[in-house]
Amino acid sequence: MAESSYAAMANNPIAVIGPQYCAPNEVDLVISRKVMTLTDGEFIVSDMNGNFVFKVRGQGALGWHNKRVILDAAGNLVVNLKEKVMVLPC
Image (cartoon, rainbow, N blue to C red; front, side, top):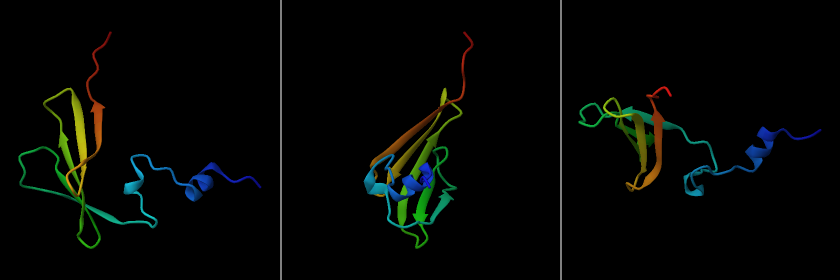
């Protein structure tokens, strides 16, 4: 019987952002929102032991795009996500 594409990917994982963000085992993460911030949409991502893993900063409402920036524990940019929220008709 042929192996499904999902099973093949599970056996040979592909790093979308980078291999340094891959773990050999499943990792449970906790996302918590920082309540008292001046920036819009700031979240902290930590593991189940409370170790800081990522920070998510977001901007929206005042611009053309909703933006999210994900930083690693050292403050390095991991990924910059942008969603276009307004489209002008042609």
